[in-house]
Length: 377
Image 1 (cartoon, rainbow, N blue to C red):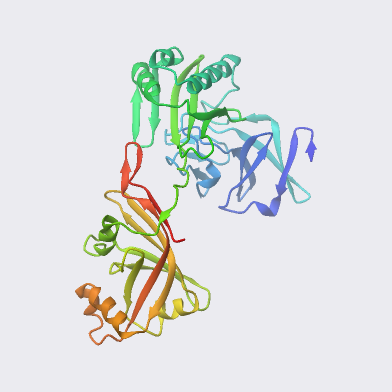
Image 2: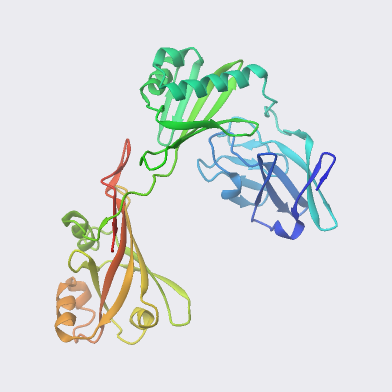
């Protein structure tokens, strides 16, 4: 329902304290927030870099961006801390008969330095940038659209000055992506990979001033799924798992108990048991993990090395091995500290048949290092 400039967006009970709700009006993403004095509405995209604030963190009357932690006042949209360059658009809200209405006409930026409607030359420069991206333009072409003090930012990287930014953009291959401008008041260009190419897409958010690009913020999109390989862990991955305790990188294991409650535990003494299985020793054969997997064998694991940013997610089906040779083999494979907790071998040998392993050995300048996706067929 559209009542003049007022647009009905949802029921009032759908907007909860500390749980912002995103709605879209004419292609514009808007975040709804409930505070003690009622509902408030703000533009839902951070003015610093492309991220939805409704995916962020709310504390009292402040919302924090999940990407670079820019903070805004919910009641006014005012940018705090100096991270975001401008305020958010603030929309009037009213609640009538249990419905929330947002007024699109007359939206304001209450803080100083807020956004202003884009001038026609700003739209033209955004179109020119889109053309440069589609053509894999060289640095000289980029200099024509950049301000002298232009800036470029990407996660863990920053450049200043027209020449530096032009060189970076000129060296970045973008013509293989399908580019479009999002239908929204600010300038966000998204390049998506063509079907089944395996390329990684990106989003660029532009700050434009006086008909020139003042800042380019680049956000890499998620990598497309890698082609599945057979479930065969290589020696390097097996070594990581086997040394997780010594390297102080315990593996997080999730499982579900017989009552249906999810659990997480840290397991430093996991061992590879062949190239497609893991093994561990549970100190109790009748309770805890051993009892849980007898009723629900599905488990998931997470390995993380914060130093190298190596990350692996694993999942599969666990079972308790009751035959004595397997029990002895698993027990003997455990580190001494694990065996010392159960001299009498009263616990249970647990085997995990892996169904999926995906991750990478680290993160480099161009993205994941040695990414892998193993699937049991």
